[in-house]
Length: 239
Image (cartoon, rainbow, N blue to C red; front, side):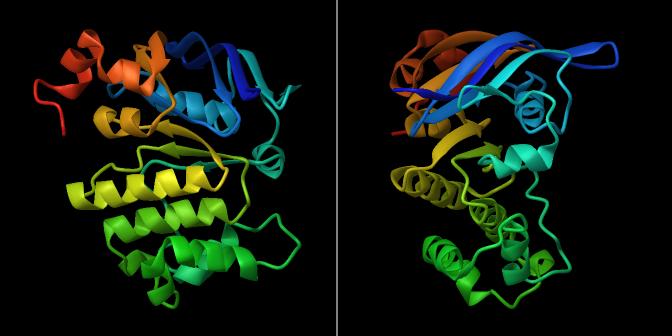
């Protein structure tokens, strides 16, 4: 299976602080890949560097075999990569429908088919299409953030902590949607502190600690790894 994204020897710094330290990993086309780790491990900095919200200090980022490190963000989005940021960041004073259309701002074609797809994935958003995004619940805003990203028709959707701050029953719904998006052919790169849910959804997992990748394996392998269990899954495993 070919790799749609390859990150090689990536380094990211903020002033004198090195957030990402010479990491390399790949994302095969059509798979779900997750980066797990504690706060401050460098996960978000990695995603932000891929879409040029943070400029890498050094390293290579290959998208479909072509170098994209340091390209303008809009050029990266136009190639088929989109990011669902941590904290959702919806446009509070715009309606649900307006937020979704903003996700397609680079497209020149008709949006009706994609709006229908998003509304089929998230019936709650269809019910509230006229409602201001700022009045939605946290779970609904997360649905909207994912839907907005899908409106660009991405080949790769990157999600930064999609379950953050959500009730457990809502988290389960978010991961059900992630699986459904994957079934429809979208490649997914996922950052998630809920390691149990992330590894259950992932084909491949990477463990990040203090800016470095310290472990890799299939999602199933990492779920059974004693070090991962102790550090990220707690004593009791979810059934």
